[in-house]
Image (cartoon, rainbow, N blue to C red; front, side):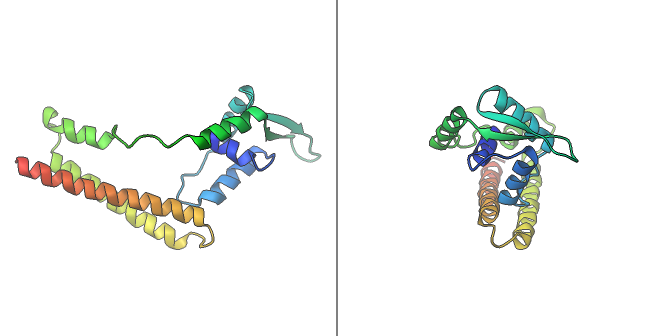
Amino acid sequence: MRLPLLALLARGPAHGYELKQDLEQLLGAAYPPTNVGQIYVTLGRLEKSGLIEGEEIAQESRPNKKIYRLTDAGQEALRAWFEETADEPRVRDEFFMKLALAPRTGLADQIALINKQRREYLNTMRNLSKLAATEDRDNRIAHLLIEGAMLHLQADLDWLERCQEELEDLL
């Protein structure tokens, strides 16, 4: 959450609720909603580390609000983030660990695990398809997020099929 908040602040000062709304509007309903408390905790940490600075703004009929702005150090951290590549491919996959360890425990059947995971992926795929149909057509970022998730799910479904074929050959 740290670097996405810095990125949102790069366009100008904002308070926590504005940042939450901006993030949700940008990413759409496919992205899990962000807890505003988490945003304010993260903003506090970013301020302590010198990446942003906050300024209390007095309001007449409401409590004061704090407006945050990016510092030069925050701008530099953001530049460095954009220069980095994404993490390596998933090799620490929890489902694969279950699949690999199931025979050693005698507590789960590998094919049953695959079928259960396949149902979960297909259900998620259906939900994402429904979400894509209801998402604002003008929000290309949200549609790209949904499309990316669906492509990852399809790859996971293909991989599950491969796992099942391999394991059935062993039986």
